[in-house]
Length: 408
Image (cartoon, rainbow, N blue to C red):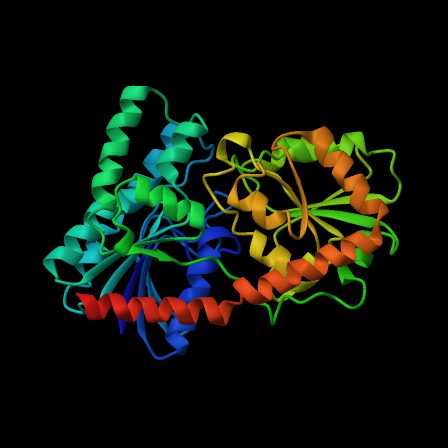
């Protein structure tokens, strides 16, 4: 099988779409498939092109058996709605020559990730003219999120943009996404059920396992062995509602047995650090390399998963699978009727989004009941092994890819 992966985020980004796209490509290449990737230089979640890469020129490299083609990319110093659109458009335009250069190779499938949907017209045109299959994988509904989060505004604009989105989605041979609710949303946007595929995010349940001894991060961060660690690890951006973390830490600043660790990078980190500047119960660390991810997630006694209320049903947080794999309970902000709320209710505690007092109270309950944390952690691990084991998820996806090619 010849697979062309097309998307703005890719390895060596450590979180979000880039992490999963990289792991997927490495897995498929190891299975003997020919894989090529059109992507940008790594920039996320720091919103800065990494050292050793260029945002102004094209490049090519070999990575884990796959050919990686990187395009120029404009990365704004400060992110707002308009600048984000220009940023995404810069990749969509700069990637067209690289996409056309794959004409003679003729992939069996053009596999595109959303965001950004800006790349869809070129991907569909290439696939149609080259008589190959076009597959859209939706990690975030970026159009809905842009309006719900206030990045774009106005009913007329929303109607216009939504109509374009619907037209594009209906032209793909397959549309996949990461949760049942997101599949239902695709149906509401006009995608035929026969074209929908469930392709969940996954966890490396072999690399991320429940720790049997204290995480080495405890000693490195100066945290007592008997302290309860509440960990947030992931992107520090706009959809997470990170101000809640600071509010929680303030409310519990006089609880000597609770320590907060906030791990991540992104546009929201400076403000969060400023809010926590005088708090002795908070520690900040950068995103950690893959080889330390198991120790990092095992540092948690409780994983924190805040969400903004207006984004809580638009995405299934990609960080959830690693949390579950670590065998630790999750404290999430979600409505009970959302898919996230229903999953976490079996292995943690669910409170209303953006309610810092409810988060703090729920954390106090979990902190005071180690036997409850252990029971919920076991359920979290069972869920990871049953539903989100990497090899099982990617093997199903491989079969779905081959079925898509056969149906062409």
